Structures are given as structure tokens and as C-alpha cells.
Length: 412
Image (cartoon, rainbow, N blue to C red; front, side):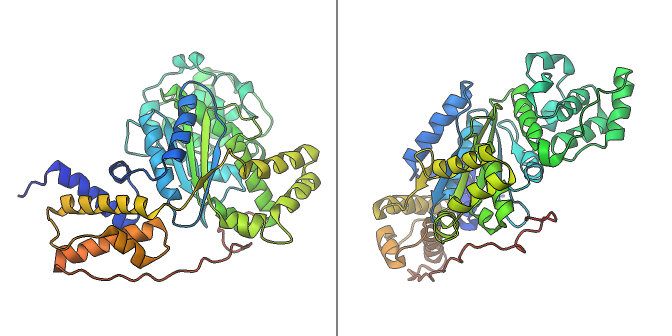
């Protein structure tokens, strides 16, 4: 059996992830960093976070295909290297942000940690005991908007087996039945659980976010980093649902500075959200949403949403700008080198990255990478230098689409 050298194996992993369009830890480390200023800013944020501060989150803006997803992948790997727990999720037909509790049920189970390649923190929690909780803020139930999630978590540390697994599911957003919790609590404590006001998902979802963030610290990590992609899909929600989504994003980014938990959020959005929804029409969200917030909630919420829109286009947010041809050529030359290492070959036909870039015209970065890999594949397989052409795809206008999301609750 042929043994593939480790260097070639790493190159294969990198090339195949690029071919699939799915950035991985290996591919992001192998390729040159085209966004050094942005990465440097985020590293500074994470450094402050690592030292106990809770920095404000950031929005990252950019055109489609310019590398926002790749950037989030790089940040994910940097955060893991800095001992943070990380959740990364893309908004989609199944995942919006207007219902914060439903969003939590999507983002919490996708948490990964530096010491594991699997999702979740059940393995490390199974080794924890309730006697260590006094060293954390978790038993300070006033810390959360509702104490029930923290009480269930505290109780879970005294259970094992199926009961422990059931309570872990509650931590991930699959709520434990009230009767089952009361029964287990009585068995363990020999008394009835404390009585609270009814937990309401619509009002008390932040209790789960705060608890899980504190639990990551309890597990020995530096906090919880939340990465959100495709934020522009909020633009497909109805007006009231969009307002709720903006309010929830504002809380996650901590732009009102009311969020006190060890959470750092970075969210990426296509410029289309600004062009089509925020500024592009007579009825734009920058004008509509503050008035709607006042009508629905009050003056404080009106001012908060006005502040959200101002901060979203301020220096607090980052812009992924198109790269130069020279920077692209450096990237594609590295792709060619990885391709050669991956398949142990050396092209007899010179690979001219600048010529390939000019031939494709103005394209997203990922298109140049795919064109380079396809060109190298043809050279490797057929010893032929093919001339690739690219079809320019037209972006669909971003508008309200009440049938886009599959969630059952009404959006307006």
C-alpha cells in the first residue's frame, strides 16, 4: 500500500476543500491572508476578550464572493487557537434571527471547542461536579433574565446517565418537561424546586445565551464566540420580523452595552442588504424601523434601533474590499504550489496566474480559485492548457419573501 507523505496529505486536504468551496483549518492556514487589516482588528478584539473584557461585536460587509465566509472560517480557527468555544451558523430558509430562542436552538448545538473535533460540550460537562459551581457566576440566578435554565443546569451536575443527557439537551435549547425536572429535583434535593414566573421563550431566550456563555468559562474556555453568516437574508423577513431580527442582532453584538455575558459576535452580510433594504428605496429600513419600534415597544427601543443602524455603517464595522490582481496572483500561485504537492507533479506548461485573472475579468475571489484548480486539473490529467471562460451570474434583488423561511411562527 502506497504511503502518502504528510506534506502531500495536507496539500490534498487543502486543495479538495478549495475545490468543494468549503474552507477548512488546513486550507485557511496554507493560503496567504488577503485580509490582514481585518484579521488584525479581530485578533485585537479576541485578545481583549481573552483578558476578561467583553468587546463589542462587529458586522463584516462585502460583495458576494469576496471572501466573507472564508474570513469567518479564519476567525473560527483563530478563536479556537485562543481557547474559545465557537459556534458558526449561516442564516438560511431554516434559520432566521427574528425568534431568538429558535436561533439559540440552532447555534448552541453547533458549539465546538479547541480540544475536540465534534460538536458539543457534553463530554467535558460529564466530568464536572456541582461543588465547582461556587467559583462561577452561574449560581447567581439574578444574573439571568430568568433563573430556570441555570437551576436546571445546576441540577444536571448531580445527575448521570439518561437524566444527565436529558438536561444537557435542555442546555442546547430542547427544553426539559417541567414535570420531569420537578420530579428529579425532588429526588435529589428532598424538597420542591423554587417557584418562578413562567418561563417564556419569547421573553427569556437571553437567559440561555448567558448561561451557555458562562458554562463555556466553567468548562475552562475563555468564552463563547458566535459567528453568523448570510445576515443579508434578514431582508427577506416581513417588517415586524425584520425589526425583531435587528433587535436580536443588536443584543448579540452588544451594541447597547446591556449584555454582560462572555460572548463575542461577528456577523457577515452582503452589501445587498444596505443597497436594497436599508438605503435603496423610498421605504427603507433606516426610516421605517425606528418608527415601528416606537409604535410596538416605546421610545427607548426607537433610539436603540436608530443607534443600531448608525453603528452598522460606522467604523465599528469592517469591509471586505476587492483585492488587487497582484494579491490574487500571489494567492493563485500558492494554490498551484499546493496542487503540485498534493498530486506529486510538476506542470510542463507554465501556470500564469495574472493571465488567468485577466482572462476571467472581474469575478469573486472563489471564482478565480476554482478556475485555477480546474486549469491545473486539466494540465495534470491531459497535459493541456485550456482557456476557461466564466459566466457572469446576476444577483437577485433582496426583497421581502414571506414564503422563504420555513419557520411556522408568523413573521408579522
